[in-house]
Length: 306
Image 1 (cartoon, rainbow, N blue to C red):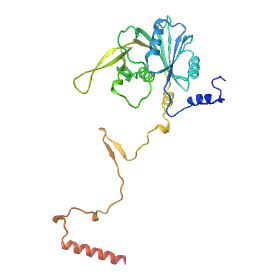
Image 2 (cartoon, helix red, strand yellow; image 1 turned 180 degrees about the horizontal axis):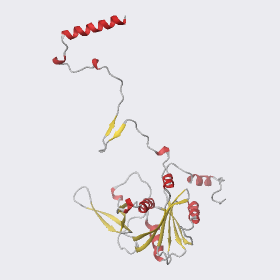
Image 3 (cartoon, helix red, strand yellow; image 1 turned 90 degrees about the horizontal axis):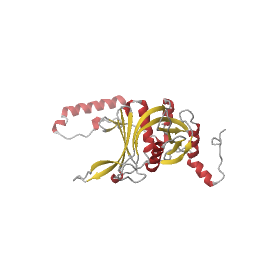
Image 4 (cartoon, rainbow, N blue to C red; image 1 turned 120 degrees about the vertical axis):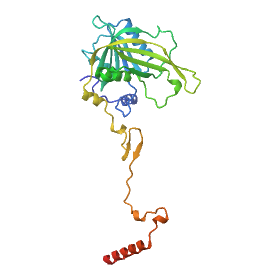
């Protein structure tokens, strides 16, 4: 049995708090990511990993020392590091003759590899090469995906989901307009993925809504999709399963139409419409002959009952 798989009983309060943080929760913690530098990574791959560490809004656990591992052939070392550092996302950089400037992005489920996608870096411009003003570190970005492949092709759909997991950062309840200043733009075109990052500038427009301009901030990446390791549909659905406590309760007798209008159904007891008070009008008054017949019918009903 692996040392990490054994049941560990805490001996101190600090160890007990540490184990409680790793227990399953209804609302999970912010996803951590580990960045691993391969044994033969070159300067380009190292700069990409450092730019990700320095700027992007995710909690990172750096493993930038050289690790001779091949994620698509042996995943045990990735799963070991994931369990040791409590990370559910990873980025692995390597370089060799067959696959130059290689970048592997993946995620875990229950400390086992769920999805893993290999990307090739064709063109790279670092943060330092673009001499523009930068956003403060830790700024939550806005993610934009352009291209039909992100909605049609299964590999690109999983890549879109993986990139959202990697760069979306913590969940926030309130957003202020001045805090929307960082844009990550992903474009899928002609078999390539163009990754650009911009700083959002709010200019005066003469009205209440400001005029928006985008200024390239860096880094800039041109990527090519290489190999993929995707989870099966059953495992993917299991990883996306929501606990019953978080599912919204269904409201009975309420429906919505295509325009968003809410309709409600009310259940009432059966009413006697003969006793319903209506507007008094001359045309609705009963004639003397009608009153005599009604009184005669009521008397006959009483006699039958007796």
